[in-house]
Image (cartoon, rainbow, N blue to C red; front, side, top):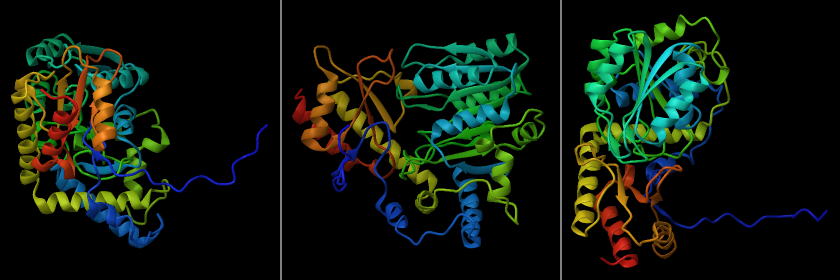
Length: 378
């Protein structure tokens, strides 16, 4: 057996411009808040911070009623927690998907031992809304409908507002679960108006905060279903227990929170509201439109249906005879810019370029365009 090392090198990862599917670069003002003096998770002053954060989350989600909190875990945990709280074994669940993360919703539903009905479409497309109507009519006992709003693996936006109206009309007892991991903070997400009962997101994409947190929002009727459950929920994802810690006073201890992460989220939400959500959405759209138009001018095409194209994330087809991974690596090593590739075993050759959070601007888009021009002249 060899000797154990007595030290490791000092950490210095070097600068990166993060323009992949996430994380995005942390806003410097957000990062600065992580240098503040840290409260303990049982400090009453921190409990006041949590109450202010709840108000910020309500405004961010545009839901004044129901419950808007955050899991101390990734967006994937927000997905899993939705099924843990809102379904029970044997419930019928309809999952609409045409991408990696939509397929993950279906996998979560299966692991929750629900009766899963899947509606799929080719990558880059959406499941037509009339197919959803037909499926709901054929399955009137559906308890929950799940969909990804902004599918990060394909660059496609699903028309959730229209979907919500269909679910309310065809299956009024069904709850609507929506993945807003990429869209929250980057484009309109309106749970109350759209009839979303449970939405979850993450901290590291359009909000421009470090990874590791999953903001979520629950409608009043979804809260009723949670409180009527017979089987217990896993402790970490128990929304009732989290509410007692976040909101009820005196609080009931639940877990040791990553305090500095919450300082960062607090500032990220504060900056989003200060900028104005509509202006923030417009900034993301302008950056995305600008970048996509410039790439089209260079002869590139996109995986996504143009009628459902995301602004925050562009899925660019890798041209024939080009090694997409090699181009990614050269852009990273020669220009310090991260762009993503295809995700999952069935992904076609694509590059995924994200312009989110602090990176959602034309200046950043120009840097990415210049890197592509240098590495792969057209």
